[in-house]
Figure 1 (cartoon, one colour):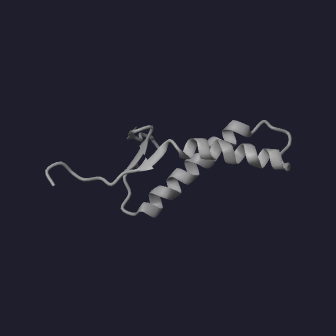
Figure 2 (cartoon, one colour; figure 1 turned 135 degrees about the horizontal axis):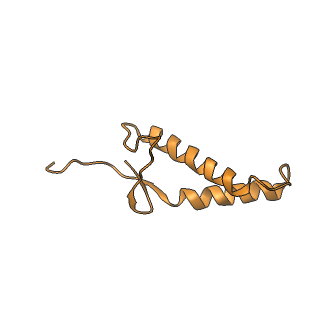
Length: 76
């Protein structure tokens, strides 16, 4: 399961429980990329190193908020 900020992540367009950890990581990467793009989309220095640094920083900020947690049903 995917958790964000310590709570189960709720997203209308995505599943939150995955059978493979790699699938969950892919979803998290995609969400972090979207967040980073939204944070810096209006910058005019698209091809500069500063743009890439800002994008990487925004990506890392969002990535820290996610955690993959193994789901264990109650009673097991």
